[in-house]
Length: 281
Image (cartoon, rainbow, N blue to C red):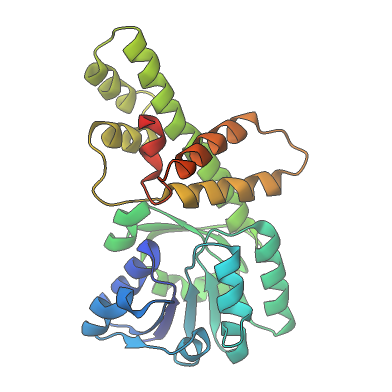
């Protein structure tokens, strides 16, 4: 069985690593804090002393950090992934990053003759933990087919959107629309409450029509606040800022409005709360 490295053990990275372990892969782990790896080490994963060390131990390297800043550190830092660059290996970022950084990273990998994919994901905590992620890929189609069998350990869908960078571009568009849907449910419920309607009846009806995953999740969280964060306010806000950067001179008033709501939530101390929190503020 192949050897993989998972660098970054937040909600999504931890789930990815766990599913590779469950499927019999040899898994090397690195995270800024080792405590997030302890349960995986008990199951047989191996701790790496740095991203470089994790890369040396693997055939496929997954980076799953939170932002451009953390991604740059683990790729290009003193003991980063690129310090162990090897054209025989496959390099993947599953993080949601800015288009600018992904393209810069892709160019750096190309100069080293490395196989690189941007492969952001959706599916939230449940998808990561259950091996049911949806991966949105940018990269070479033929090379993707070589790793597709390994991706079955963590994903139920793997879709190529184009050359390197295309996966990230689609993910930013997707997250923007989902955030708008989330905020829209909150506004709809405020209107329903003002109108004197039965909130439960309205919410159940909206979850069915127009429905959809974001509406359903928002309504479920509206009724009962999540005990675990599925997607933190600070990270969806980060994603929307990256989308605005990608948009350039294209106007995006809905994005701007939702981003303001998210920033207000952060300012009120809810950065680590589930992104549906904005509907209760």
